[in-house]
Picture 1 (cartoon, rainbow, N blue to C red):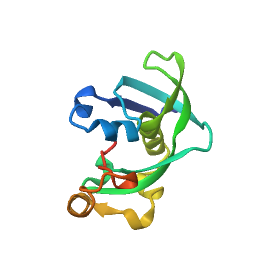
Picture 2 (tube, rainbow, N blue to C red; picture 1 turned 90 degrees about the horizontal axis):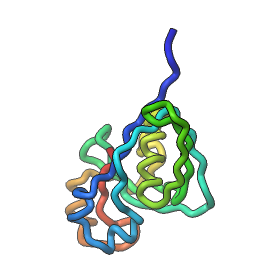
Picture 3 (cartoon, rainbow, N blue to C red; picture 1 turned 135 degrees about the horizontal axis):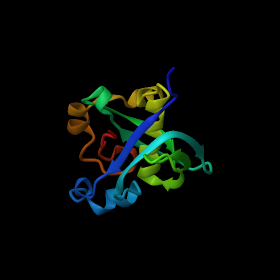
Length: 143
């Protein structure tokens, strides 16, 4: 008999952030997230605030699109030790959680993207990289 188990590993390393401009980090509300495991997560959107940013994924390597996501979420889950945990996240951390929990439910970012923004990273670099405002900021893949 099987065990119902959904598991994701979450991390956004400090060294990945050190090369990003401070303005971009502030715009995305992005800061380091320590390594942790979430098991059988249940996600709740907090508030109506949304953020639209380019998002990528190793499942579709070489592409990116603007994905609207909730700016704040609460996630209840079990730790790797089976202990009940809960976290409230905002900004990029909230985006990472939503992205990874979507994977556990069979959803990819292309299922949520603004269709006309889907682009290869080559095209993004050629046409959008110079623009640093709004949703034209650099797409950093969520792994």
